[in-house]
Amino acid sequence: METAPPPSILRVLFPGRFRIHGVSSVRRSGVGAWAPRGGMGGHPPGLGGTPAQDPELETCAQVLDFSDPFSTEVKPRILLMGLRRSGKSSIQKVVFHKMSPNETLFLESTNKICREDVSNSSFVNFQIWDFPGQIDFFDPTFDYEMIFRGTGALIFVIDSQDDYMEALARLHLTVTRAYKVNTDINFEVFIHKVDGLSDDHKIETQRDIHQRANDDLADAGLEKIHLSFYLTSIYDHSIFEAFSKVVQKLIPQLPTLENLLNIFISNSGIEKAFLFDVVSKIYIATDSTPVDMQTYELCCDMIDVVIDISCIYGLKEHGAGTPYDKESTAIIKLNNTTVLYLKEVTKFLALVCFVREESFERKGLIDYNFHCFRKAIHEVFEVRMKVVKSRKVQSRLQKKKAATPNGTPRVLL
Ligand SMILES: Nc1nc2c(ncn2[C@@H]2O[C@H](COP(=O)(O)OP(=O)(O)OP(=O)(O)O)[C@@H](O)[C@H]2O)c(=O)[nH]1
Image (tube, rainbow, N blue to C red; front, side, top):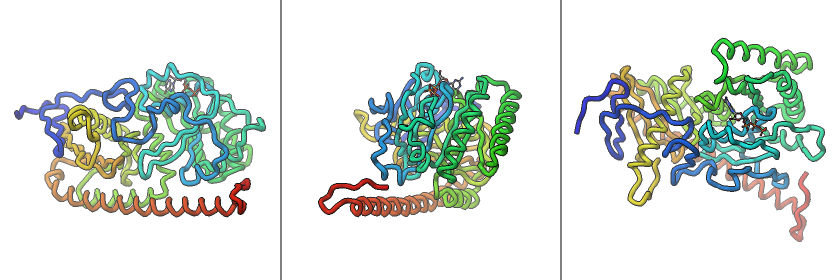
């Protein structure tokens, strides 16, 4: 039955599965929640990614395993550091475990280093190490050289609602130590919990922290260290946006992906396109036009809606199948003559586009270009898999070489 669309979101169409006309409102999710929303949703069946439901990982992912020198060779490492109660574990749980922000109030303090693999997709593939608040760099059992050597990004979390002088001193110590060991680390500073600050206060705090942190580095003769700053909160999408930017720096194929997106949008009359990791709602690439927060939020909401509805109506009998597959596609028409268009790219990736209504009339062209784009992404992915495989073979060969003839492994230096 066709009904007149309400003014806000006009219609949501899921052509491959079913049609819904006259969706009057889109329930806003608890940030990061899968369907059924609210609370710790976990992943829908069939969607892998972060092992949210693994009881071992729920308490503390994995205590450090220093004996596996190859485990981190392929996956870049992201470290979460900062003072106690700054919000490190909350960030990890909200972004990668779909924990609702309110539930983080009950998180217990982390007292040992927790390591966790995030392997949501072909591109989003890394390890997160959550550190306890106070690390003693002088503790002989803390092998910081080994830790920093394999690190891709160091996220230092500062509680903006607290006095941040101590945090800045810690930031300086951490960054200088890490830089000595590995000059390639990306240093990312999350000025966190900004939901409690007014807009003016946010800007003032960021300016102050930026200034002081860089002054400290300059005083130590280390002005070449680049710190990136982000204003974050788990109560809105800012934490996902910040994490997206951190993760993007670790994706070697980023320029290729951006290039493909640029070609795709310019040939299809599309305003903006994001390549999303559906599980975490991190966007792993976008075209080169600027990103505005509202656009990003709308994309996140769209993914939530698609997965929610798919979970409810898209599964086969007895819950068989997956809520996100090759047929997953959705169109949402907004009341400002913009159309949101979502299409499956890989098992874990979705393309979300902003198109003007008049451009969307040439949907056939968009779909044809999308087909070419998707093919190209799969090719990039295949090349990546080949590289990963050959690295693994090399690692195994190295391991074998290091073993004595009777098979007893020697210590690898
Ligand atoms: N207002 C607000 N509170 C937050 C935010 N992120 C985390 N929190 C709260 O901060 C408190 C501490 O969070 P945790 O994640 O346990 O902090 P942590 O840095 O892991 O703490 P340790 O494990 O002791 O090092 C919790 O009560 C969270 O609910 C945020 O963005 N805004």
